[in-house]
Length: 300
Image (cartoon, rainbow, N blue to C red; front, side):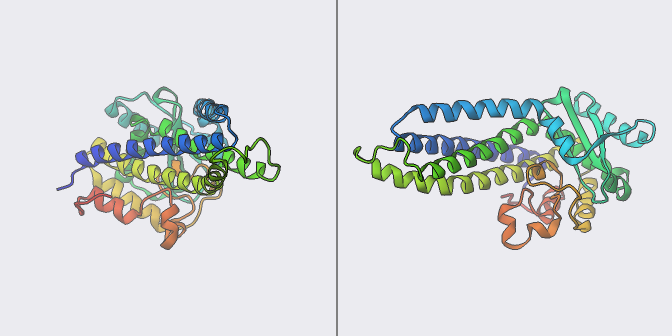
């Protein structure tokens, strides 16, 4: 029977499998592009540049995200209950006290960001504070602290940047075909690599996006499980998720670039219905609640 403990183990294994697959895709695309232009330097530059972009994005990710979401640092006296919950759960989790931010938005939601546990931020919306009771709010905060403890901040940032970088180099390759720059059509196998390059440039960004979204969904399941273990009361988080999903309206500053960071889809539950579920950054709330309450034996 599935438990919160083996859900953690399963999600960690699946996530690292997807991360490995993502890097294989990037290396494969880089190899094809370098073969089309008969230059191994393209592959080396692509890998090096992606690492540089990862470093820069990781180092300043918290400031970028806070600016994009319009979050402001919470006043300790005005939000004493919130601070107490965050502080108590951080102590229980063995984490330093993160900075606490509030987003003035009626849509209930929350996220964590920062480059590591010593520079972490937990942000909640005013709408979340308005509708959740103490047990439910503890469940949400425990979920976000679990993202910090599980190093999801670094992982999600790396994957997002790699997906964006892959889209950029694919776009550059397709645009370069109009100018014929540097391709060796007469070289043996050149035409084959050219066709493969075009196919890779079109399909790789789509595959990268699907991998990115799959990783995001796995990390949400893992944070749910870890958060429930932290509070020892999975019903609190399950109830909070049901209330959050019931609001079903987008946030004022919903942005695809930061959607994966939030505990629930900032575009609302309807944005992830039907075929759109394939491209959703979050698993269905029904599946998350069922996993928390032990109603299913097979977590996919």
